[in-house]
Image 1 (tube, rainbow, N blue to C red):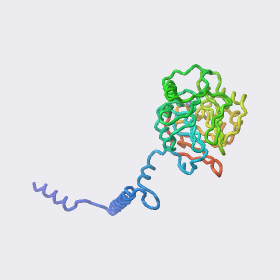
Image 2 (cartoon, protein in one colour):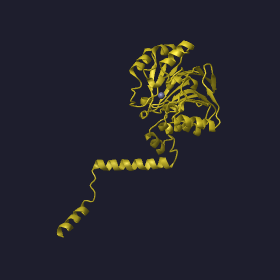
Image 3 (cartoon, protein in one colour):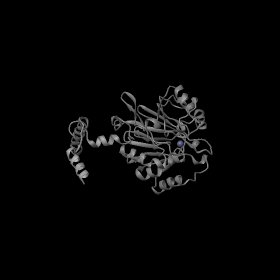
Image 4 (tube, protein in one colour):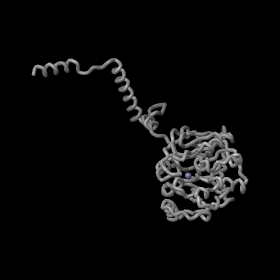
Length: 336
Ligand SMILES: [Zn+2]
């Protein structure tokens, strides 16, 4: 009993031990908390406009490229949306948009939230380059989320008709919504705002769906973009043989930067200033391949990659082309 009483007495004598440095940390924390609550609850938080909400948002994985607010709303731009080991390319001319491919099913949220952040409720055109899951996985979701005026399809006469459930669901949704479809043919042109999207080639006879990919050229004021989907060497050779290939400022690396395409002769024909590789972090394919990277270097192109830069936007500005990148990239969790 005596021992117990003695311990209690000792506790009362020294309730909490605080060193001077702990005291300083405590005071600073309390100060930050008070300021934070004031700014957060107060909404705008004074001249600087900083709120605790801004701080909170900054801590989130940021899929929107930094500085994107500098791009004029009526601007000309291409957005390579980070959808991991997949493709989703948004072509913008003012307030009109064309989406080329729609990533994997697993990237549905990333894709839809990007479209939402851009304030997009309507697509002038939705393009399916070919029916692989990493290009049409979230296409049904896009069709249900925004209004689509027209869908450009690959030329299915050149390959066995696809039978996957993902593909069937996309086609069913297009039909249910009575959205007009067009089969890609060389020479077609689609108007997107002040820009024109031209079909230069529409794939080759194949049992490899990659080679159904169209060769597409987007020409906007101050911005020229070449897209070849997952087209392989055969598609590039076909384009070289049959098309007057224009110079492009931006080239979406063919087939996620695979060595099965991105031939030097094709790159020399289009002489891109920028090549953007849409691929997943640590993907099992080794995309982009070393050979492709060497070819990009040989034509003097600057390479940007969604696995390292996150979503990449290249926009036409008064000072020429400007690049905007987010941070980080999505993990590769799916097939190419
Ligand atoms: Zn692919």
